[in-house]
Structures are given as C-alpha cells and as structure tokens.
Amino acid sequence: MRLFGKVANEKGNVLAMTAMAMVFLLGCAAISLDVGLLYIERVRIVNAIDSAVLAGVQHLPNRPELALQTAASYAQMNDLQVDEFQFQLSDSNFSLTGQAEREVPLHFARIFNQELGLVKARASARVASTSAVNGVVPFGVSEGNYQFGDLVILKRGAGSFISPGWYGCLALGGTGADIYEKNIKFCYNDRVSIGDFIPIETGNMSGPTTFGIKYRIDNCQHTPRCTINSFVDGCSRILIVPIVRVSEPDSGSVQVVNFAAFLASNYIGNGNENAVEGAFVRYVVPGEIDDRISGYGLYSSYLYE
Ligand SMILES: [Zn+2]
Image (cartoon, rainbow, N blue to C red):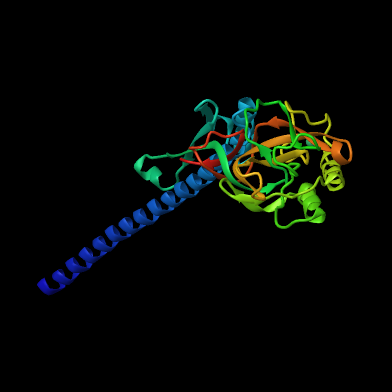
C-alpha cells in the first residue's frame, strides 16, 4: 500500500507541476503576444511620426504654418488620430518636432489587470544649408549680398563681365551648346559640392540659354501662376544655382562657394543683350548639409532625433 500511495503521490506531484508549467508557459506566450502587439504598434507610430516631420520640414523656415499642416496631414494619412499626435516648431522655425502616443488594447495581460499598453514615438527634423546637391543649372552667380525676392542676373549679356569672356555659363559634364542647353532644361544630374571647381562655358550661348529657360518657364502650368511668395514645390521654374567665386579670372574655372534657389522670371534679348533673371527664394532640396555654412537660402532636411 505504501508503494501504491507513493506512486499516487508522485503522479499527483507530476500533474501539479505540469499544470504550473503550463500556466507559466501560457503566461510567457501571452506576454510575448502582447509585447509583439506593442512592438508592431510602436513601429507604426514611429514610421508615421518620422515621415510626418520629414514632410513638414520641407516648408521650413519660411512657411511654418504650412509645415505644421503638412506634418498633421501626413500623420493622419499614416493612421494616427488627431488626439494621438502633436507637432512643435523650434530653433527659429528651422526644426520641427513631433510626438505621438497610442493606447493599445492588450489581450492576455488583462489577467494581470493590465488592459491597455502605451506606446510612444518622437522625431525631430531640421533644415540646414545645403553643401552638396544634384540638379543644378549651368549658371554661376557671383557671391554677394542678396535679399529674398531680389531679382538677380543668372546669366549675363555683354557689357557686365565679371571676368572677360565669361557670361555666367558653366560647363557641367562637358562643353558645348547641346550639353549646356540640356543642363538648363533637365538640370545637371551629377552631384556638385561646395569647394568644387567648375569649368566655365565660354561664349554667350544666347540661343541655348533662351531655348532652355523658355522650356523651364513654359513648363510651369500652375494656376495661379507661381510667384516668389507662393510657388509649387518641384515647379520647373525653380532653378538651383551654384554661387561661385571667380578667384582667378583667366583660370578657366570658378569655385563653388554656396548654393541658392531662384524662381526663373525672365529671359531677355538676343546675342549680346541675352540675359536671364531669377527671383531669389528659399527652398528645400534633397542634398547634403553643413551646419557650419551660413547659406543663401537653399536647405536640405534631415532627421536628428
Ligand atoms: Zn510653377
């Protein structure tokens, strides 16, 4: 009997231990399911808030209200509810921070009286002066003091030389009228960086300049027509231009010292009268940044938090 009793006892112990192990394992599985759920929700709101601040920051520093509106609409497009996020501007409207919080209903943690889990996300993006960029046009504007809205001569006619024989045209990716005109119409797609030396395109290039700029101006079909105070991002009239230093007039090249954006406004005249004017605007483009540069209003954005 003692023997049977011992076996029965041991069976009971094994059952009890198995039951405890089952509870423990189920608990672990339940917790990992809830943890997985929280993880997935957190990834969702992190991605939503990152894309929202990156979209909003494209309008800084000159259109802060639009930056906030854009960030909010991106957040909602990515399934954040209005009461789940907020955005703030800082750093003189050069940066935009977003926070999101979401309460996630839990399934298994309810057995521990935990019905909701809180996930949070935070992201900041800012704009800083562009130090390298793809997509410039083949004009070199001399460094100087410009105010936003100023009309600046991007390509000169005769009689306003900075350097004898140079009308402000650049030879990007090769010389000659065809390459030059193509670079005006479709931009120069390789990267140009501050510090680069670019060969000058000699000669007036009157015809290719007129064809190229007419193409860019005519391709703005926006209504109302783009102006310096209100233009559509990516408009064909926006020209990214290297700001250059002519250190040695006879060297055959100029050095890039900065970048600026202009809204192409006018092209005039033929031959020695041929010139292009652009209005100096602030603009954000994809590119490399350098916080140490005091720029000319061309910015690139990045996430820093
Ligand atoms: Zn336009």
